[in-house]
Amino acid sequence: MSNRQLYLAAYDISCNRRLRKALYAVRGYASGGQKSVFECFLSPTEKTELLETVSQIIDHQEDRFMLIQLAGVKHIRTMGKAVLPQDGPFLYVG
Image 1 (tube, rainbow, N blue to C red):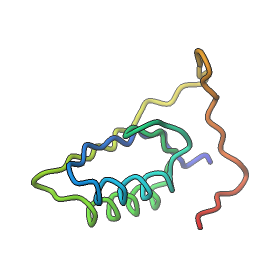
Image 2 (image 1 turned 45 degrees about the horizontal axis):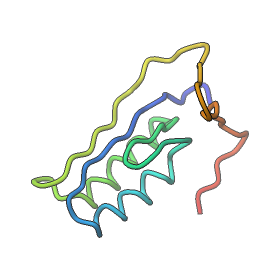
Image 3 (image 1 turned 120 degrees about the horizontal axis):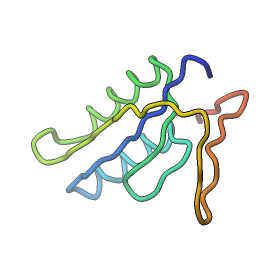
């Protein structure tokens, strides 16, 4: 976990087919989120894989995708029904 960084992945995709594919691609790396914005704790390799996958899915003329690195914080505050992000001892992708 020490080499992972917190990112915010967000997208705006005009075609429902590409939207669904992007949703499944980003969810595979996300630790939380809603609709088209997700929190992702990514290693450098996972970041590269995610960017390559999304690049193959989206139409670069019509769609938008952003992956923003967030500054790390020592204490995360949540409000309402929010749940603190959890990163288990292993990551299952399948």
